[in-house]
Image 1 (cartoon, rainbow, N blue to C red):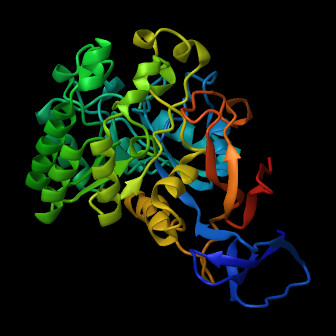
Image 2: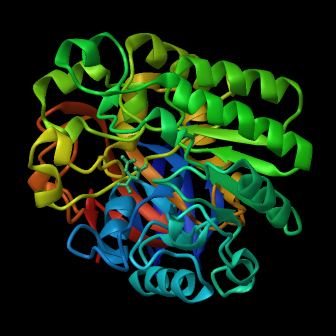
Length: 425
Ligand SMILES: NC(=O)N[C@@H](CC(=O)O)C(=O)O
Protein backbone atom coordinates (compact mmCIF):
# COMPACT_ATOMS: atom_id res chain seq x y z
CA UNK A 1 0.00 0.00 0.00
CA UNK A 2 1.41 3.39 -1.01
CA UNK A 3 2.02 5.94 1.73
CA UNK A 4 1.05 9.57 1.10
CA UNK A 5 2.53 12.67 2.64
CA UNK A 6 0.17 15.62 2.30
CA UNK A 7 2.38 18.61 2.90
CA UNK A 8 1.40 22.02 4.20
CA UNK A 9 -2.36 21.46 4.37
CA UNK A 10 -4.91 23.22 6.58
CA UNK A 11 -6.85 20.61 8.58
CA UNK A 12 -10.43 21.90 8.92
CA UNK A 13 -9.22 25.49 8.55
CA UNK A 14 -6.37 25.36 11.11
CA UNK A 15 -2.77 26.53 10.45
CA UNK A 16 -1.02 24.42 7.78
CA UNK A 17 0.61 21.15 8.82
CA UNK A 18 1.62 17.83 7.27
CA UNK A 19 -0.36 14.59 7.21
CA UNK A 20 1.23 11.19 6.72
CA UNK A 21 -1.13 8.47 5.51
CA UNK A 22 0.07 4.91 5.81
CA UNK A 23 -1.63 1.49 5.93
CA UNK A 24 -5.09 3.01 5.61
CA UNK A 25 -4.82 5.34 8.58
CA UNK A 26 -3.52 8.80 9.37
CA UNK A 27 -0.13 7.81 10.78
CA UNK A 28 1.18 11.23 11.80
CA UNK A 29 0.09 14.86 11.91
CA UNK A 30 2.63 17.64 12.44
CA UNK A 31 5.03 20.10 10.83
CA UNK A 32 7.92 19.03 8.59
CA UNK A 33 7.13 15.33 8.39
CA UNK A 34 9.24 13.21 6.08
CA UNK A 35 8.85 9.68 4.77
CA UNK A 36 11.14 8.57 1.96
CA UNK A 37 8.68 5.93 0.72
CA UNK A 38 5.69 8.29 0.58
CA UNK A 39 4.18 9.97 -2.47
CA UNK A 40 4.09 13.69 -1.71
CA UNK A 41 0.90 15.66 -2.35
CA UNK A 42 1.41 19.43 -2.13
CA UNK A 43 -1.34 20.69 0.16
CA UNK A 44 -0.40 24.38 -0.04
CA UNK A 45 -3.57 26.42 -0.06
CA UNK A 46 -5.73 23.32 0.41
CA UNK A 47 -8.10 22.42 3.24
CA UNK A 48 -8.42 18.84 4.49
CA UNK A 49 -11.81 17.77 5.78
CA UNK A 50 -12.99 14.40 7.02
CA UNK A 51 -14.47 12.67 3.95
CA UNK A 52 -17.98 13.90 3.27
CA UNK A 53 -20.92 11.61 4.10
CA UNK A 54 -24.21 11.81 2.23
CA UNK A 55 -27.35 10.63 4.00
CA UNK A 56 -29.48 10.86 0.85
CA UNK A 57 -28.25 9.54 -2.52
CA UNK A 58 -30.23 7.91 -5.33
CA UNK A 59 -27.99 5.42 -7.15
CA UNK A 60 -30.74 3.95 -9.43
CA UNK A 61 -29.29 0.44 -9.41
CA UNK A 62 -30.99 -1.99 -9.71
CA UNK A 63 -33.44 -0.93 -12.39
CA UNK A 64 -32.42 2.37 -13.96
CA UNK A 65 -28.78 1.78 -14.79
CA UNK A 66 -29.22 4.13 -17.76
CA UNK A 67 -29.58 7.01 -15.27
CA UNK A 68 -26.95 5.92 -12.69
CA UNK A 69 -25.21 2.82 -11.42
CA UNK A 70 -23.71 2.14 -8.03
CA UNK A 71 -20.33 2.56 -9.70
CA UNK A 72 -21.05 5.80 -11.60
CA UNK A 73 -22.76 7.32 -8.57
CA UNK A 74 -19.85 6.26 -6.37
CA UNK A 75 -17.43 7.95 -8.75
CA UNK A 76 -19.53 11.12 -8.74
CA UNK A 77 -19.51 10.97 -4.94
CA UNK A 78 -15.73 10.55 -4.68
CA UNK A 79 -15.25 13.48 -7.08
CA UNK A 80 -17.52 15.50 -4.82
CA UNK A 81 -15.33 14.75 -1.79
CA UNK A 82 -17.49 11.96 -0.34
CA UNK A 83 -16.20 8.79 1.26
CA UNK A 84 -19.61 7.35 2.19
CA UNK A 85 -23.13 7.61 0.81
CA UNK A 86 -26.45 6.21 1.96
CA UNK A 87 -28.34 4.78 -1.01
CA UNK A 88 -32.09 5.38 -1.10
CA UNK A 89 -34.47 2.46 -1.51
CA UNK A 90 -36.59 3.63 -4.48
CA UNK A 91 -34.87 1.36 -6.96
CA UNK A 92 -36.55 -1.22 -9.18
CA UNK A 93 -37.02 -3.68 -7.59
CA UNK A 94 -37.41 -1.60 -4.45
CA UNK A 95 -34.79 -2.20 -1.73
CA UNK A 96 -37.38 -3.74 0.60
CA UNK A 97 -35.73 -7.14 1.18
CA UNK A 98 -32.41 -8.40 2.50
CA UNK A 99 -31.60 -9.61 -1.02
CA UNK A 100 -31.79 -6.19 -2.66
CA UNK A 101 -29.99 -4.26 0.09
CA UNK A 102 -27.23 -6.88 0.04
CA UNK A 103 -26.97 -6.51 -3.75
CA UNK A 104 -26.53 -2.72 -3.48
CA UNK A 105 -24.06 -3.12 -0.62
CA UNK A 106 -22.02 -5.68 -2.59
CA UNK A 107 -22.00 -3.49 -5.74
CA UNK A 108 -20.69 -0.65 -3.58
CA UNK A 109 -17.88 -2.82 -2.26
CA UNK A 110 -16.99 -3.94 -5.78
CA UNK A 111 -16.85 -0.34 -7.05
CA UNK A 112 -14.66 0.50 -4.05
CA UNK A 113 -14.88 4.27 -4.50
CA UNK A 114 -16.99 5.18 -1.46
CA UNK A 115 -18.68 3.14 1.24
CA UNK A 116 -22.23 2.54 0.03
CA UNK A 117 -24.63 2.06 2.92
CA UNK A 118 -28.06 0.92 1.70
CA UNK A 119 -31.22 2.43 3.15
CA UNK A 120 -34.12 -0.03 3.30
CA UNK A 121 -37.71 0.71 2.35
CA UNK A 122 -40.20 1.16 5.21
CA UNK A 123 -43.08 -0.43 3.33
CA UNK A 124 -43.29 -3.19 0.73
CA UNK A 125 -42.77 -1.70 -2.73
CA UNK A 126 -42.97 1.81 -1.19
CA UNK A 127 -46.73 1.30 -1.43
CA UNK A 128 -47.42 2.51 2.10
CA UNK A 129 -49.59 -0.50 2.96
CA UNK A 130 -47.55 -2.93 5.02
CA UNK A 131 -44.14 -2.91 6.64
CA UNK A 132 -41.20 -4.32 4.70
CA UNK A 133 -38.83 -6.90 6.23
CA UNK A 134 -37.07 -4.32 8.41
CA UNK A 135 -35.53 -6.91 10.73
CA UNK A 136 -34.19 -9.05 7.90
CA UNK A 137 -32.60 -5.99 6.29
CA UNK A 138 -31.08 -4.98 9.64
CA UNK A 139 -29.67 -8.50 10.14
CA UNK A 140 -28.37 -8.75 6.55
CA UNK A 141 -24.76 -8.22 5.49
CA UNK A 142 -25.77 -4.64 4.62
CA UNK A 143 -26.64 -4.00 8.33
CA UNK A 144 -29.38 -1.50 7.45
CA UNK A 145 -30.15 1.01 10.20
CA UNK A 146 -32.00 3.72 8.25
CA UNK A 147 -35.32 3.01 6.55
CA UNK A 148 -37.12 5.34 4.18
CA UNK A 149 -39.83 5.31 1.53
CA UNK A 150 -38.25 8.45 0.08
CA UNK A 151 -40.03 9.59 -3.05
CA UNK A 152 -43.17 8.65 -1.11
CA UNK A 153 -44.37 9.69 2.31
CA UNK A 154 -45.28 7.06 4.90
CA UNK A 155 -48.64 8.79 5.08
CA UNK A 156 -50.59 6.30 7.23
CA UNK A 157 -49.99 7.35 10.85
CA UNK A 158 -50.54 3.84 12.19
CA UNK A 159 -47.96 2.39 9.83
CA UNK A 160 -45.53 5.18 10.73
CA UNK A 161 -46.03 4.42 14.41
CA UNK A 162 -45.41 0.71 13.84
CA UNK A 163 -42.25 1.43 11.84
CA UNK A 164 -40.90 3.69 14.59
CA UNK A 165 -41.70 1.01 17.18
CA UNK A 166 -40.09 -1.74 15.14
CA UNK A 167 -36.73 -0.02 14.59
CA UNK A 168 -36.47 1.04 18.22
CA UNK A 169 -35.25 -2.48 19.09
CA UNK A 170 -31.99 -1.89 17.20
CA UNK A 171 -31.88 1.93 17.53
CA UNK A 172 -32.80 2.30 13.87
CA UNK A 173 -34.11 5.42 12.19
CA UNK A 174 -37.13 6.14 10.04
CA UNK A 175 -36.21 8.82 7.48
CA UNK A 176 -39.41 10.45 6.35
CA UNK A 177 -40.17 12.12 3.02
CA UNK A 178 -42.60 14.59 4.58
CA UNK A 179 -45.42 15.20 2.11
CA UNK A 180 -49.10 14.85 2.93
CA UNK A 181 -50.19 13.33 -0.38
CA UNK A 182 -53.76 14.62 -0.22
CA UNK A 183 -52.40 18.17 -0.15
CA UNK A 184 -50.08 17.73 -3.14
CA UNK A 185 -52.29 15.97 -5.68
CA UNK A 186 -51.24 17.14 -9.14
CA UNK A 187 -48.69 19.54 -7.68
CA UNK A 188 -46.02 20.85 -10.03
CA UNK A 189 -44.15 23.43 -7.97
CA UNK A 190 -44.23 25.42 -4.71
CA UNK A 191 -47.67 26.90 -4.00
CA UNK A 192 -47.26 30.64 -3.91
CA UNK A 193 -47.17 33.78 -5.93
CA UNK A 194 -45.12 32.25 -8.77
CA UNK A 195 -47.37 29.18 -9.14
CA UNK A 196 -50.40 31.47 -9.27
CA UNK A 197 -48.79 33.57 -11.97
CA UNK A 198 -47.74 30.52 -14.01
CA UNK A 199 -51.04 28.73 -13.48
CA UNK A 200 -49.36 25.58 -12.16
CA UNK A 201 -50.85 23.47 -9.36
CA UNK A 202 -49.01 24.23 -6.12
CA UNK A 203 -47.34 22.03 -3.45
CA UNK A 204 -48.11 23.97 -0.29
CA UNK A 205 -45.57 24.31 2.53
CA UNK A 206 -48.15 22.98 4.95
CA UNK A 207 -48.10 19.57 3.22
CA UNK A 208 -44.55 19.16 4.54
CA UNK A 209 -45.06 20.89 7.88
CA UNK A 210 -48.16 18.86 8.81
CA UNK A 211 -46.33 15.55 8.37
CA UNK A 212 -43.27 16.72 10.31
CA UNK A 213 -45.52 17.93 13.15
CA UNK A 214 -47.32 14.59 13.25
CA UNK A 215 -44.12 12.57 13.04
CA UNK A 216 -42.24 14.38 15.80
CA UNK A 217 -45.23 13.68 18.04
CA UNK A 218 -45.20 10.01 17.03
CA UNK A 219 -41.44 9.77 17.55
CA UNK A 220 -41.83 11.38 20.96
CA UNK A 221 -44.65 9.02 21.88
CA UNK A 222 -42.69 5.94 20.83
CA UNK A 223 -39.26 7.22 21.96
CA UNK A 224 -37.75 6.38 18.59
CA UNK A 225 -35.40 8.14 16.19
CA UNK A 226 -36.90 10.13 13.33
CA UNK A 227 -34.94 11.76 10.54
CA UNK A 228 -36.62 14.30 8.27
CA UNK A 229 -35.44 14.26 4.66
CA UNK A 230 -34.98 17.42 2.56
CA UNK A 231 -36.58 20.04 4.83
CA UNK A 232 -37.64 22.92 2.59
CA UNK A 233 -39.80 25.44 4.45
CA UNK A 234 -39.46 28.04 7.20
CA UNK A 235 -42.49 26.52 8.93
CA UNK A 236 -40.81 23.10 9.05
CA UNK A 237 -37.83 24.70 10.76
CA UNK A 238 -40.11 26.07 13.48
CA UNK A 239 -41.76 22.68 14.06
CA UNK A 240 -38.31 21.07 14.33
CA UNK A 241 -37.04 23.79 16.64
CA UNK A 242 -39.89 23.18 19.08
CA UNK A 243 -39.52 19.40 18.90
CA UNK A 244 -35.79 19.56 19.57
CA UNK A 245 -36.36 21.92 22.49
CA UNK A 246 -38.66 19.25 23.98
CA UNK A 247 -35.97 16.59 23.52
CA UNK A 248 -37.59 14.63 20.69
CA UNK A 249 -35.05 12.33 19.00
CA UNK A 250 -35.33 14.01 15.62
CA UNK A 251 -32.65 14.99 13.11
CA UNK A 252 -33.11 16.84 9.83
CA UNK A 253 -31.37 17.49 6.55
CA UNK A 254 -31.49 20.23 3.94
CA UNK A 255 -30.31 19.92 0.35
CA UNK A 256 -27.85 22.27 -1.34
CA UNK A 257 -30.51 23.33 -3.86
CA UNK A 258 -32.99 24.31 -1.16
CA UNK A 259 -30.27 26.55 0.30
CA UNK A 260 -29.70 28.40 -2.96
CA UNK A 261 -32.46 28.25 -5.57
CA UNK A 262 -35.96 29.73 -5.41
CA UNK A 263 -39.27 28.90 -7.08
CA UNK A 264 -38.62 31.78 -9.50
CA UNK A 265 -36.61 29.23 -11.50
CA UNK A 266 -39.86 27.58 -12.58
CA UNK A 267 -40.51 30.61 -14.77
CA UNK A 268 -38.02 29.17 -17.24
CA UNK A 269 -40.21 26.04 -17.52
CA UNK A 270 -36.91 24.16 -17.63
CA UNK A 271 -37.67 20.83 -15.90
CA UNK A 272 -34.13 20.70 -14.53
CA UNK A 273 -35.60 22.89 -11.76
CA UNK A 274 -38.46 20.48 -11.01
CA UNK A 275 -37.72 18.72 -7.74
CA UNK A 276 -39.47 17.20 -4.77
CA UNK A 277 -40.00 18.99 -2.43
CA UNK A 278 -40.13 21.97 -4.77
CA UNK A 279 -37.83 24.97 -4.73
CA UNK A 280 -39.35 27.46 -2.27
CA UNK A 281 -39.03 31.19 -1.57
CA UNK A 282 -36.20 33.48 -0.50
CA UNK A 283 -37.73 33.64 2.99
CA UNK A 284 -37.61 29.85 3.24
CA UNK A 285 -33.97 29.88 2.14
CA UNK A 286 -33.12 32.43 4.82
CA UNK A 287 -34.78 30.27 7.51
CA UNK A 288 -33.05 27.11 6.28
CA UNK A 289 -29.64 28.80 6.32
CA UNK A 290 -30.20 30.11 9.84
CA UNK A 291 -31.33 26.64 10.99
CA UNK A 292 -28.24 25.06 9.49
CA UNK A 293 -26.04 27.51 11.37
CA UNK A 294 -27.80 27.07 14.73
CA UNK A 295 -28.18 23.29 14.48
CA UNK A 296 -31.95 22.91 14.14
CA UNK A 297 -31.00 21.37 10.81
CA UNK A 298 -28.25 18.85 11.43
CA UNK A 299 -27.03 17.92 7.99
CA UNK A 300 -26.61 18.95 4.36
CA UNK A 301 -27.67 15.93 2.28
CA UNK A 302 -27.61 16.00 -1.50
CA UNK A 303 -30.79 14.15 -2.57
CA UNK A 304 -28.68 13.36 -5.67
CA UNK A 305 -31.48 12.31 -8.05
CA UNK A 306 -30.15 11.37 -11.49
CA UNK A 307 -32.68 11.12 -14.30
CA UNK A 308 -32.26 9.98 -17.90
CA UNK A 309 -32.59 12.61 -20.63
CA UNK A 310 -36.05 11.43 -21.72
CA UNK A 311 -37.34 11.83 -18.16
CA UNK A 312 -36.09 15.42 -17.89
CA UNK A 313 -35.99 16.98 -21.34
CA UNK A 314 -39.73 17.03 -21.86
CA UNK A 315 -42.67 19.18 -20.83
CA UNK A 316 -42.53 20.35 -17.21
CA UNK A 317 -45.67 18.42 -16.25
CA UNK A 318 -44.25 15.12 -17.51
CA UNK A 319 -40.71 15.52 -16.20
CA UNK A 320 -39.57 13.50 -13.19
CA UNK A 321 -38.64 15.53 -10.12
CA UNK A 322 -35.04 15.54 -8.96
CA UNK A 323 -31.61 17.01 -9.60
CA UNK A 324 -27.97 15.93 -9.38
CA UNK A 325 -26.07 16.92 -6.28
CA UNK A 326 -22.98 14.89 -5.39
CA UNK A 327 -20.46 16.67 -7.59
CA UNK A 328 -21.53 20.19 -6.65
CA UNK A 329 -22.61 19.98 -2.98
CA UNK A 330 -19.36 21.16 -1.44
CA UNK A 331 -19.21 24.13 -3.80
CA UNK A 332 -22.76 25.14 -2.94
CA UNK A 333 -22.01 24.80 0.78
CA UNK A 334 -18.94 26.99 0.35
CA UNK A 335 -20.97 29.52 -1.61
CA UNK A 336 -23.78 29.59 0.95
CA UNK A 337 -21.81 29.30 4.21
CA UNK A 338 -18.46 30.81 3.25
CA UNK A 339 -15.20 29.21 4.44
CA UNK A 340 -16.76 28.06 7.73
CA UNK A 341 -14.77 24.82 7.67
CA UNK A 342 -15.78 23.53 11.07
CA UNK A 343 -19.47 24.05 10.28
CA UNK A 344 -19.05 22.41 6.87
CA UNK A 345 -17.26 19.43 8.46
CA UNK A 346 -20.02 19.17 11.07
CA UNK A 347 -22.94 19.34 8.64
CA UNK A 348 -21.47 17.34 5.77
CA UNK A 349 -19.30 14.76 7.50
CA UNK A 350 -19.26 14.34 11.29
CA UNK A 351 -22.98 14.56 11.97
CA UNK A 352 -24.21 12.51 8.99
CA UNK A 353 -21.63 9.80 9.85
CA UNK A 354 -22.87 9.78 13.44
CA UNK A 355 -26.54 9.61 12.42
CA UNK A 356 -25.89 6.72 10.03
CA UNK A 357 -23.56 4.97 12.49
CA UNK A 358 -20.75 4.83 9.93
CA UNK A 359 -17.72 4.21 12.11
CA UNK A 360 -14.44 5.39 10.65
CA UNK A 361 -16.17 8.18 8.76
CA UNK A 362 -16.73 11.74 9.90
CA UNK A 363 -13.61 11.76 12.05
CA UNK A 364 -11.10 14.62 11.72
CA UNK A 365 -7.62 13.57 10.56
CA UNK A 366 -5.58 12.63 13.65
CA UNK A 367 -3.05 9.89 14.35
CA UNK A 368 -4.65 6.46 14.19
CA UNK A 369 -7.96 7.38 12.57
CA UNK A 370 -8.95 5.77 9.25
CA UNK A 371 -7.71 7.95 6.39
CA UNK A 372 -11.11 8.92 5.00
CA UNK A 373 -10.62 12.51 3.97
CA UNK A 374 -10.91 15.02 1.18
CA UNK A 375 -8.70 17.92 0.06
CA UNK A 376 -10.36 21.08 -1.20
CA UNK A 377 -8.93 24.06 -3.06
CA UNK A 378 -11.18 26.86 -1.78
CA UNK A 379 -9.60 29.48 -4.06
CA UNK A 380 -10.40 27.58 -7.27
CA UNK A 381 -13.52 28.41 -9.24
CA UNK A 382 -15.02 26.07 -11.80
CA UNK A 383 -17.75 26.33 -14.37
CA UNK A 384 -20.12 23.39 -14.29
CA UNK A 385 -20.36 21.60 -17.63
CA UNK A 386 -22.99 18.84 -17.47
CA UNK A 387 -21.15 16.74 -20.07
CA UNK A 388 -18.08 16.63 -17.82
CA UNK A 389 -19.87 15.19 -14.78
CA UNK A 390 -19.12 11.60 -13.77
CA UNK A 391 -22.80 10.90 -13.15
CA UNK A 392 -24.54 9.05 -15.98
CA UNK A 393 -27.19 11.76 -15.93
CA UNK A 394 -26.97 15.43 -16.85
CA UNK A 395 -29.71 17.05 -14.77
CA UNK A 396 -27.64 19.54 -12.81
CA UNK A 397 -29.37 22.83 -12.01
CA UNK A 398 -25.96 24.54 -11.99
CA UNK A 399 -25.10 24.11 -15.67
CA UNK A 400 -22.65 26.78 -16.83
CA UNK A 401 -22.67 28.43 -13.40
CA UNK A 402 -19.25 29.26 -11.95
CA UNK A 403 -18.95 27.94 -8.40
CA UNK A 404 -16.27 28.27 -5.73
CA UNK A 405 -14.08 25.38 -4.59
CA UNK A 406 -12.70 22.27 -6.20
CA UNK A 407 -12.11 18.80 -4.81
CA UNK A 408 -8.42 18.04 -5.42
CA UNK A 409 -8.16 14.62 -3.78
CA UNK A 410 -10.26 12.13 -1.84
CA UNK A 411 -8.88 9.21 0.17
CA UNK A 412 -10.85 6.13 1.22
CA UNK A 413 -9.04 4.18 3.92
CA UNK A 414 -5.74 5.60 2.76
CA UNK A 415 -6.20 4.87 -0.94
CA UNK A 416 -6.85 7.82 -3.26
CA UNK A 417 -10.14 7.64 -5.14
CA UNK A 418 -9.49 11.12 -6.59
CA UNK A 419 -6.11 12.75 -7.28
CA UNK A 420 -5.46 16.04 -9.09
CA UNK A 421 -9.21 16.46 -9.34
CA UNK A 422 -9.60 13.26 -11.38
CA UNK A 423 -11.06 9.90 -10.45
CA UNK A 424 -8.31 7.35 -9.95
CA UNK A 425 -10.34 4.43 -11.34
N1 LIG B 1 -36.18 14.39 -4.85
C1 LIG B 1 -36.71 14.19 -6.03
O1 LIG B 1 -37.17 15.15 -6.65
N2 LIG B 1 -36.76 12.98 -6.59
C2 LIG B 1 -36.44 11.75 -5.95
C3 LIG B 1 -37.58 11.17 -5.22
C4 LIG B 1 -38.52 12.15 -4.65
O2 LIG B 1 -38.29 12.62 -3.53
O3 LIG B 1 -39.51 12.46 -5.31
C5 LIG B 1 -36.02 10.75 -7.00
O4 LIG B 1 -35.79 9.57 -6.66
O5 LIG B 1 -35.87 11.15 -8.15
